[in-house]
Amino acid sequence: MSAGEQHFKDIFNSSPSGEPLKIPIIEEKLVVSSKRIATGSLLISKKVLEEEALFNGTISSEELIVERKEINQYVEIAPEAVRQEGEVTIVSVMKEVLVVEKRLMLVEELHITKRVHQEQKSYAEKLRKEEVTISKGDPGTNI
Image (cartoon, rainbow, N blue to C red; front, side):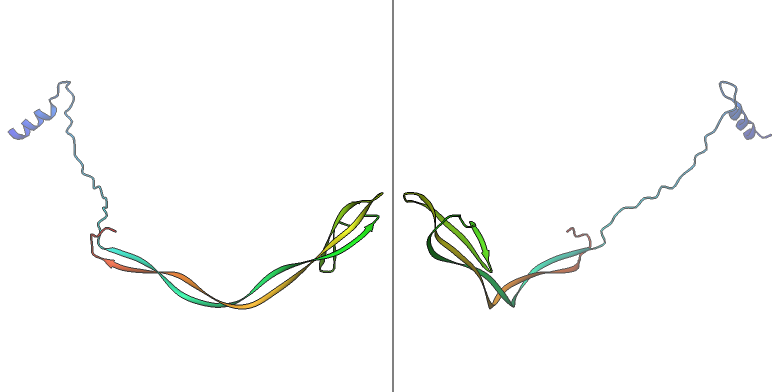
């Protein structure tokens, strides 16, 4: 055995407790990670466009016509406060008249008729819409 081999054995076998000496073995491990790097950018813009739009439409409206019809008749029993005769709604208006005796008098009736008017009209109204533009920007530009 050579002197170098003997020296290695002496170091290897010498420990304070008399146990064989342990030599740690190092192992390398690979850790892989990723990182974001800006390689370009996009520029997005939008604008609102307006255009005139013409349309024809029918407008319906209702009108109530109130006719006062004087009745001025004494009645024994009051008629219904509101009644319907065909398309006419009748509202009875009553009052008490002081005579020697008290009697009901039908003073008037309101005859209410509904009429529908229709007319053609043209209207102009602005309609808006959005337009989006996307363009590629320079690398490293933050938006």
